[in-house]
Image (cartoon, rainbow, N blue to C red):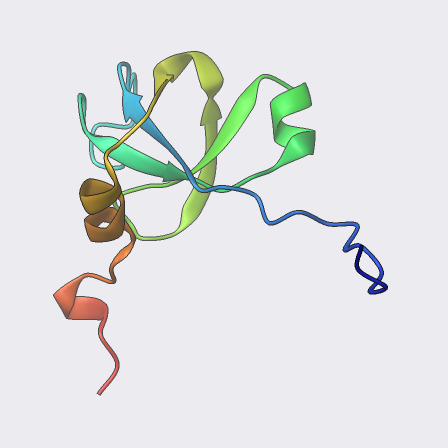
Length: 89
């Protein structure tokens, strides 16, 4: 048994979703594309989901516009890598 105190916060797993609706936001959300979810309990209570959209920033959208997906480890690693244009010098 460990004598170290337990951490009260568990690291939340990164969740991915597929966009199935983008009414009024075709430049921000591409249909059938995978997006990364940013955890936001307040937004979830209101029926929204915070996702990193095409701008590279996270914004709130209606949760029903997305379907959660499980991705293989290799795909997950690729999705979490920074795009080439955003790499620091």
